[in-house]
Length: 70
Image (cartoon, rainbow, N blue to C red; front, side, top):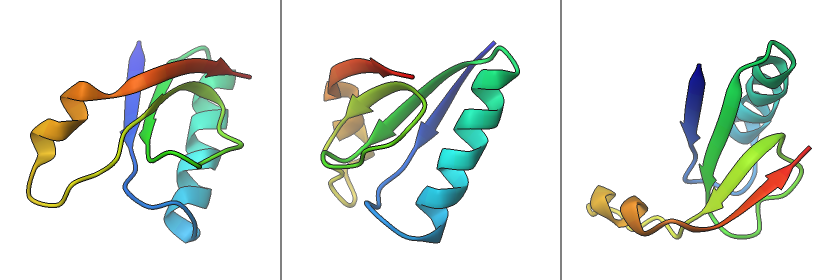
C-alpha cells in the first residue's frame, strides 16, 4: 500500500501530525510519500518538494527533488 500526504505549511501542529502519521505508517510497512514545500525537514518516508500555489493545485504535478529519508 502507498500513502501520499500533501502538506502546504512548513511548521505547526498539522505538520507535527503528518510527521507522526508518516512515521507510524512506515513502521507498519506502508510506502509513505510526502509532498511538502522546500525547507520542511525531519520527515520519515520519500519526500517530494513543491512550492504550493494557491488556486493552482495542478502545480503539484511538477514536484521534484525526491529523496528517501529514514
